[in-house]
Image 1 (cartoon, rainbow, N blue to C red):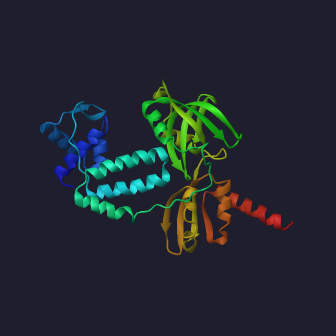
Image 2 (image 1 turned 120 degrees about the vertical axis):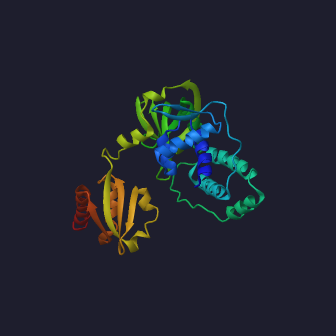
Image 3 (image 1 turned 30 degrees about the horizontal axis):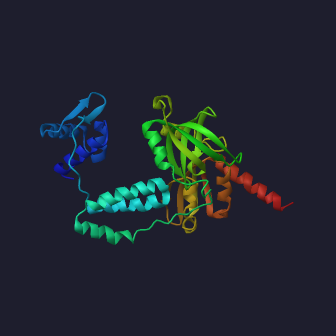
Length: 321
């Protein structure tokens, strides 16, 4: 990227956030901090009102805005791909809003770029494995936009939530922390006033939801990142790095299953493939490994080997009765 393009990109980055750290600019453009300081100074000398707070970062003075930015055809194509993903992995509310945004993007493209995008549109597809989940009018799948609004504005949510465990719907007032997508479902982490603790709510189990005018203090809650790092457990155990060797000829048949079990790394070694999963070493994961027989080898931790042996022994003893 030449310097003029980089200066424009830095200006766009500064306008996109309230405060931008010099280190963020450095990492994004792979330049030194000294170069960041020179580039920001060049923008200031060109008349852009950039302020700085020692130890915090740079900001653009309120009231200054860039003229409308044109998208390149490559950027528009990337957004088109994102739209296809939104259709499968978001809900009806976000899908609708993203569709409106794409219409605005298409409207500012040059004629030739519009044709380019039109040609791509019918030739990009996302196929999603859809497990069984609650459907129908009772669970309308349209709350992501409202939840995002409540997180952004720090507003309390009131909802009717259906619990599979108790098979009953309860009315909850919650203070949202954040949302994440995992195992084909969106999850909402929030402080539940009814249970007086943080809870993980499956969004597809929400029957009704309303954003309340009441606001809560964001500072008193943990961040989503910290919550997931310290509280996200399964069967009362911490997640661990579980390393295995699997015959490469078998790997191609497990498709999305490996992602369901938390695949974080995969390295092809020829006849075998090394895979790293983030899972508790007990529970369903070692049972899943047993189904592959001698096509898989456990590298670690030792506790995972022990659970595989335990479950395999139970199966052997069952059939020897």
